[in-house]
Image (tube, rainbow, N blue to C red; front, top):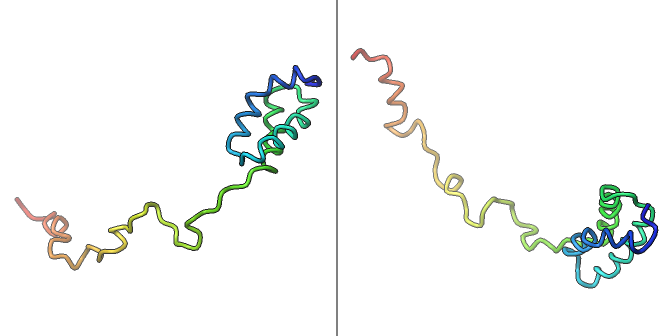
Length: 104
């Protein structure tokens, strides 16, 4: 069981990795809450699961600048969606099927 500061310091790399994406003002508060939550953790797996829940309390995703816009994969409009469809109205369409049963 991690009960002393020396044992909690074994989890410092994990705490630092999880504190990276947080806002700079929240990192010190997260570190203090993480160290308090790790008291009683016996391994890295249990520490990670404990810190995951603590991290979710401090993580605030940045606002999406595209909110309110339609979602698309890229920044350019799709040529497939903007041009007229190709198909049966094309005189070349279906030529392979028409000539499939011809005797050669």
